[in-house]
Length: 207
View 1: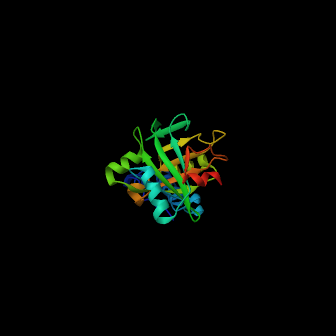
View 2 (view 1 turned 135 degrees about the vertical axis):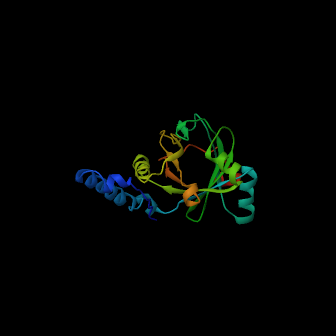
View 3 (view 1 turned 90 degrees about the horizontal axis):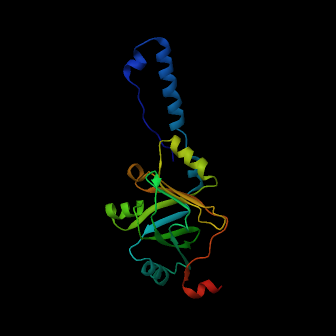
């Protein structure tokens, strides 16, 4: 996937003024063009997760297990202080959601039920209803990946960090819904996860 943007400078900056102004303007455009024709390196990792917002998490998990045989599911509630730091639209936030994680082959599936606070999950449901909300991409260095996205003009609209055993782990949603039809989530998984609140089906947690 290659992201390309079109930039222009005022005509007088290129065709008018002295030669130095013109050369500088062309140099800026050249540099921008090279940056914007670059690939986002983290896209080479492919998609590792599908995120789906559901109305009733427990019922949805039962449906996935009973109809498709997908499971077991590990349940968590993401809220403070379980998640140490949260932002929404660039500001500190305090939203919460219940989620359940499982795998379909190598693909992780995340089901999300909205609880409290403003979030991109609530925005999505208000605008589009329930359904597939994001595609997740694994990254090794979150800060480097965020900077790379920002160079491309793509900002983080929501994130959370510190949910791992060692207060590691970080997720960050990029502002890609309008331009690309889906929200991309960058995921730096914690080295160790805290125990889930429950496992479904219950006997799967005994293995």
